[in-house]
Image (cartoon, rainbow, N blue to C red; front, side, top):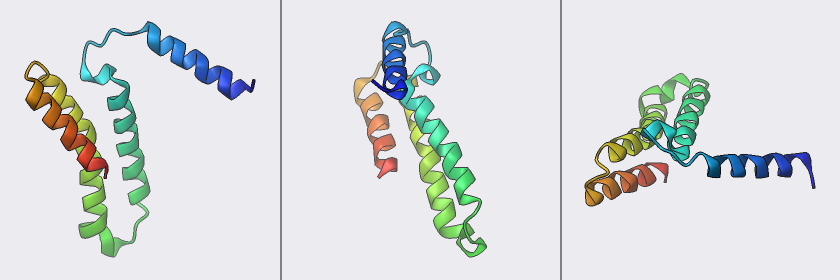
Length: 95
């Protein structure tokens, strides 16, 4: 078994152990979407200047929308339909 596979198994076991979620920032999906949004921002800095107000802006806006909708959905989680709508919006921003 490779070191990477064993490392991943340890990660999975640890994530099962810490099941307490106090804020949306504790959600793995939020953390991943936030990291991806930051990475997208970094990558789009290299886009041509003529794309700044079209493609670049749209990509950045869409990537920021994912963690924002997850956070907003978490805040409204006691209203299941609102919570699900925000998660659906976050998913839609990924496509």
